[in-house]
Structure formats: C-alpha cells, structure tokens
Length: 137
Length: 121
Image 1 (spheres, helix red, strand yellow):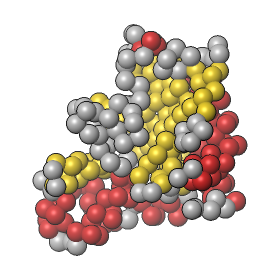
Image 2 (cartoon, rainbow over the protein chains, first blue to last red; image 1 turned 135 degrees about the vertical axis):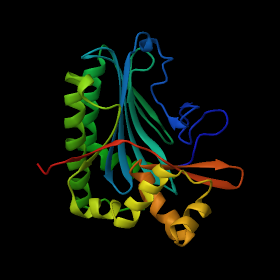
Image 3 (cartoon, rainbow over the protein chains, first blue to last red; image 1 turned 30 degrees about the vertical axis):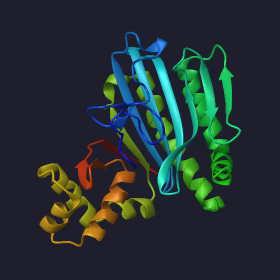
C-alpha cells in the first residue's frame, strides 16, 4: 500500500489522518460526525488480493451514527477501491468505482442497516464487482 | 487477470461472514472491542502464508527497535533486503506493517492491530 502524500491523500483518494498516515474514511467532517466518541476499524482480508474494511463511528454506546464499508482489490500492484458504502454525506449510498461508476442512494437507511446491506451485497456480488474492476483497467 | 474460482469465491464468502460477525458484535457493545481489528477467517493455508517464523520475528523487531530504513532492518536481521521486503509486503497486506517514504528512503513501520482468528463455521 502506498503511503499518504504530503497533502494527506491516500492512494485510493481518501483523506488520511496526517499523524498516522493511515486512511481514515471516517474523517470527522461529515454531517454525521458531530458527537462521535468512538471509532472502530475492522479489516477483513478475504483472499490474497481482496479485502473489506469496515469503519464505525458511535455517538453513544450502542448508537452507530457513521459507517463505511469498503471492498478493495489489489490490482496493478496497489489496493484500489471497488465498492464503497457509506453515509458520510448524511445519506446512505453505494458507490461503485471505475468507468461508468455508479452511485446508488439508499434513502432513509440508517448506519446499522447500511452495514448489513453491504454485507449481504458483498456476499453475493464481490466476484462480479472484482471482475468489473479488472475489466475496467 | 485473477480468475475467481468457486474455491476462491467460497474463501471470500467465509471471510465476509466471519468478519461481519465481529462487526455485528461490536455494533451491540462497542466498548468491549478494540478500535483496530484484523479479522482472519480460519484457513490454514492463509494463516501459514502470513505467520511464518521469519515474519513474526520481523514484526517483533519492527516493534522493538523501529528501523531507519529497510536496508538497516535487513542488515540487522542478517537477511537479504529483497526477502525482507517481500515478507514486509505480506505483513502489510495483513495490516501489520506499512511503509513510509522519505525521499528515496523507505522505512518500514509496525502496525499493531488486534488480530482475531475466527474459528471455522
């Protein structure tokens, strides 16, 4: 994985925490971030070339306010985002990267439901997303 | 292009199920879980690929005495630079190490996630 550059941008285009130089998808700047007291990151290596990263932001114990789920694939020597689900802009949505990239909003969906939706979608469709990302190179 | 075989598909699905099981638990009681977790589905092949004796030694050394460069680390370990780089790349994919670039110098840095090995379903 390439490190963040001086501007704090990770190779996958995500802002990073300058101190740690790790991508922080939940950067505390979205409308949902006010009052976040705890953030967690779960990395789920799937295969040698595929992984899921889940980031959670809690505003109170047991109250999930922010969530992002990223499916990333190791293509051409670096990790690339293939699909991202998050509610960083106040609305839940799925962002599929690459040429003809698609954004699918999930109106009214809360953060917990978004995490579960991402799980189900990835369980069924990750090979298809991977194939589309490879074909788009 | 990596062909996604049925076995690879199942491996990915097992990992997603195992990983999200931990996420579900954290959703209910976030205080009980650390902030940075790598969830590895139990798979002897994957685990033995990551956790060789040499790589674990390397990881421990990264923690004990952070090196100034990749070359310095290789010299200290008495190993070939290319082999050390290869091992660090594998640790990097498990989020146990990362590389910092300072001009032409590459400095490996240890990361310390909590590592969970989810038991077979």
